[in-house]
Image (tube, rainbow, N blue to C red; front, top):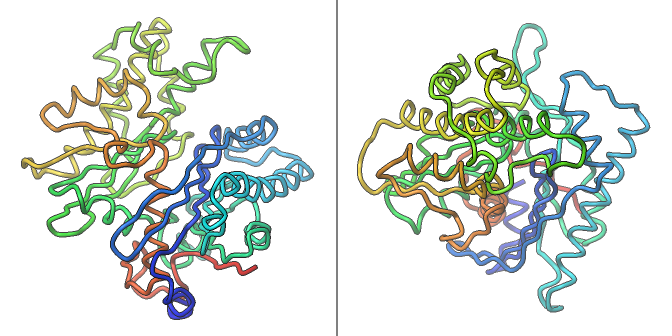
Length: 390
């Protein structure tokens, strides 16, 4: 497959790639359009498209429990509407550009999913992914090849079902120098540490809750229509006081002590919000404490997994949660002498670091670069994904 891709794209010196990536289930679609050569990239356009209300409600209903409780006709409608939404997002973004830039050379589609996790057959554990939406409509609408089913192919290639983005993370970090600590704060927080001197990924793993617990506390302590379901800018958490003893208890949950790499889901942390020591707090103290938990578990993970306390380290934040100013202050306090910055200082929109890293990985692959995959040693299929042709 790589030889086929390299042959198809080999005459294109500067490839234009469109990335459509599903954010959190309560969020929307991240759309990023960029051009890249073998050693440089530039962003052409980007947008964030929130899910329409019915899609958001169904996705939230699916994610709330481990068993599927959605009618089949609703599930079919959701799958169909997401297929159309992918194309609608792409056409809206591209229509704003000059005619010469409106046609990408290829697209990358990271779909939302019903479920992802371990399963087993014959006592042999494995991972699997059940995505939503169809890439064929996007490929046929834009008349370009589309790579999709990224998580599923990573599972089939022997991996755990993670986005193949780390080659792109190496490309982004290359201009920084030293040790680069990428932290993406969505519903779940994920840390990727890059040693630019050795050009290698030191660790790449979920660290714990991002904004999922913060959002849950916000919803629990407000009536219908009283807030947006999240603590905008961390303004309410800033009005509370962190309970240090409660924070320590929360941060000692066994999951946090597991070694990397590991993957988290929002359901993993529901029980933390039911601890009597936590529920006894006043509402805004609960919010301050649970916001501090995100910062502390990120830092605790860093100290456990990366013991090289040297100079030249920088933290770069991305994801919607990095807009939470209270969380940002907690992170700066924990990391202390290590600078904590936004990826915007690298010329990357706050929500677009993961889509860009994913797109840069695809660009390298179709250009014939040997990409190291985080998967089995001898995968029988390309770990990158399934190619759909118009």
